[in-house]
Length: 488
Image (tube, rainbow, N blue to C red; front, side, top):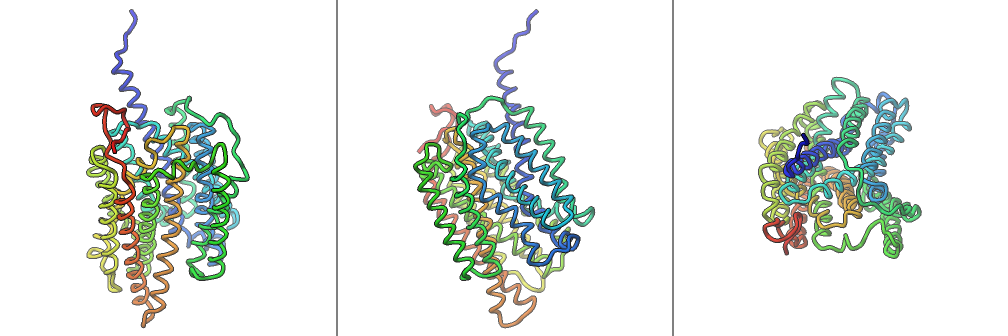
């Protein structure tokens, strides 16, 4: 006797497949997010083992951020052309090979090259992962839950990286901060190959305009390099000014040529959309403040309070916990019913309050009285920004351009982190140098001054979100629109 399947069973099966997609996409995104910081705590051990100088060590971090930041637009377009399933698996495979090569590096140049390769494959993987969520979850409630997971990972993955880097370095070896990616990537790739659909909208097999892609990548690389150089040379140095000017020229040339292209890397209709443009600016500002906090707290905990790498990593856990709780208890529950700016603008203000608390740091200590409440406010606030941000940035975009839209918001995040870190570090160093006394008191004064500036950046993010992000609240089928529609 033939068995009959109820339509509801097929719907439930499709729903189960969607959540499986989320699980493997989230795993891949966590790997990319934490790899930006997991090596930071291991860097002193790697420097000693590979006999690198203080001037050379920065390239272990910079090589990753440079390749990641300057290739994101290209990675998004490759995902649209190649197909998201193949791009997802290829990105994971390449990231795993680069990680294994970095872990086995016999000398610093090999490690730096492996980190650059990691960044290149991360630039393919990050927009692919986000675009997969954008086209998989379309209903307001499911979309809110999915992007709560993604937004939390994006906002706190760096904190997890600091903790995991401390554990692996202290109990195993610094090389495991790279080797750990291999099994994670293998699980995510195998799962993605099984659960992701084989047919999807593509770019019609059109070839990528390599010269245009190189101009865009070079412009972004010059901008990120300027931010990195500003940490040691200051924003007024000739090197930084030259790199900024070069970046402006290259990016302007790219925009002129891209606007005339039949298939642009950066479709201007995506950027011209007021709500999406507001999201890009808000994300860049929020991440600038957030990464500035990572920098300040990492040095304050280890240099001033004397924490070990593991203790410093554990000290960041309240920020992660606050972000998780807020994402699920507040952001994901409210997102289907309120406009995005109703979450993002107050969230940025809460994060600004956390940075304001950090201005009260003392040389004599104060983890429980100052750092802990600041971390809770920062985690809660930034999660309320990031969860609706990623959803709004990809809402209503043609599936054939989902990779490009995802790449733009990832680029905003990467540039925000680079600029924020360089800017706040420069402010901290300048304030410490101008302090009357030397030593720990000067350092703490610098941290306090930079925290105040970080709070101002987050307030600016709140203003941008309130003014520019005019998207209405999501509406459901009962309101007469298809899932994922928006009201104005």
